Image (cartoon, rainbow, N blue to C red):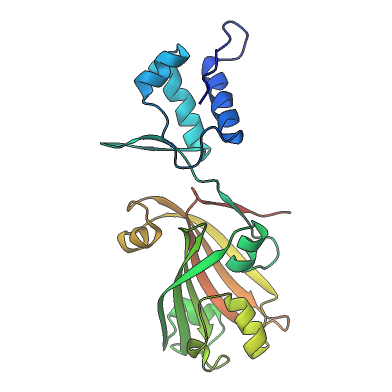
Length: 244
């Protein structure tokens, strides 16, 4: 890692120069995702700045998702894994979104069962109260690390035998190929939430970590609701985009 000599009195604040230098070093591959930066005292001394100036630069890069800072023994500033771009425009499942990002999507099944629909699920799927629905919960990973926690509900009457199918791939492809009920459009709502203990364990983050919840109801081209989902995304690993 080649250290930069900061320009003095040139109009560009030192913390901005440090940010640019670190971004360029990451871009050139001199420091890679997961690498730990030198300690604050050492790094500030090598750059010839105060620790306050250095911390300002590190805080800005942390807010942008470039760095992850941890406390305690073994802590420090680490280069973050690059965030996956997930475009919510149109209707594509997680598998397709990862394919567009040139990543392989993986799924770990947590549970698959048929149950009575909770009131909000029955309303979203336009079912009678407590009608049977298939509930499928999965952890979705890309690049070997978890990025999302999916919880989906499907009308059981429309999809007999769904839980006997292979649930490790794209559920949307399964709906299309097995049942002829390909989702065609969706209504989605985005809300910031914090990770509960069980959710945090599955996503490998600390309880209370900020997450982004995407609540979705998907419809066929005929307007039949076939899925109601509540997906939780790690914002440090996924960047959600909507094009208008």
